[in-house]
Image (cartoon, rainbow, N blue to C red):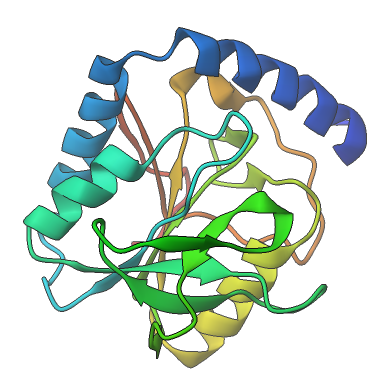
Length: 196
């Protein structure tokens, strides 16, 4: 992905790449993703609240990973879009709990689910680079959310992706937030020049 590429052009290209990868995904890939994620969480306290997501379009499916994390003792939550240009809010959820349809056609917890503040965010993406920057859909929800949470507390952002979504450089702006780690079905990536 050339550095001079606009975000819109980069998104169009990345969507095509990810759609092809999605069609080739096997259960073994998702199982491997879940295993690598659980291993990466090995030293993280079971008190941590993990925010997953319900996959849309061709996002890599994190539901097997959420099942594995819940079995390992972590509390889960899911994001909900509250308003345009606002950070996401998070509501407690377990893998056997029902979902209702939220904005953008995404499943969200039922209205009676308590609001929580996660410690770890699992983040979908269109592409990522070696420095840990991600290309999203352009709504800025995750960047705004991470910025706000990082001002309040220590928050760990983990991108979930296919290995082939790695690009030379993601076009970025000053408000784009860096991921702390990227997990793929092949293993984990730690961003270069990372201080953790």
